Image (cartoon, rainbow, N blue to C red):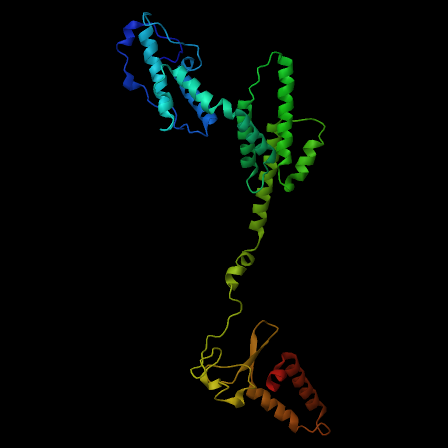
Amino acid sequence: MAASSSSTVNTNQSEIGVFKTENVSAQVITLCLTKENYFPWSAALTMGIAARGRIAYIDGRNPELAKTSGVWDTWFLEDNQVKTWIVNSVSADIQPLILWKKTARDMWVVLEQMYGQKKRAIRTYQIVKTVYGLRQGNPSVADYYGALKAKWEELDYHSDIPWHCPQDQALYVAQVWENKMFLFLAGLNDEFEGVRSQILNSGEVPSVEDVYSCVEAKDQRRLVTNEGKRDLVPYHERSALVSRGTGGPTRSLHRCTHCKKTGHTMDYCWDLHPEKKGNKGRSSIGKMPVSEVPKSSGEKVSISADQIRELRAYLGRIDVNQAETADETKANHALAVIGDTGLGDREED
């Protein structure tokens, strides 16, 4: 039966006449053969043809029948189905090489000879070189292991050795998987040195799947721990950079209309008022600059320059020899306040 999943030729002649070719897909894979991707293409197309019960038409087990055979019509129909799948899965520049071949098997052999056998050694070398040079780097453990496993699968495809002794085959497979485990561990980042040493010193050789599961669990715990630490940072600390911004301390936006410089107004422009050059602070509202002294409660008290001058004048009129002890104590205390706040230095400037 043409729609059957069996690879044998249908001998029921009553069903051949009612078979509808339009019910059969003209394409079984989306991958298109180029001059560089024969091996993945052949693997994909083989699966597609086998899934439709036609694999015997390309592996040589169902050769062409004589036209006098009672089942030739069915064979011819099914063979052309496979030929259509092959032609529709190759690039336009390759189609002329196979379009006039008599059978699907002939098409398959031509493509294998042109793009498969000659490049097998080169491709195997490229895969081995990639496998031994692969390192985790920035990708996750899962992505790193996936890349390795993909290369291993392709390498196994090219190393299909016919074994005659099952025991030797089992030993060889065990050795290959042990090497894969070593390659996986060797390519991990240094942050997994602890789990790597633990596995190598365990005294037994686990499978590469078990090793991957152990390392992946370690990686997941590390990610969860780091995320938890980030969440423990106080909100005001995480938003500090946003609060500060990148411009540094806030600067005055006052601009003098006389000298066109920022930081002061025309009332305190040194070009117009050189007598005010000693005043470090500048006010945009015509007041004398003030200094802010922090209080123990966290609030700030303001002392103007006029008050500082009056205080100094008062202290200058005091006769130290005649002053009362209480007055001396008050004067000394006032001087100490001025010295602690640094306002005396500002006035002198």
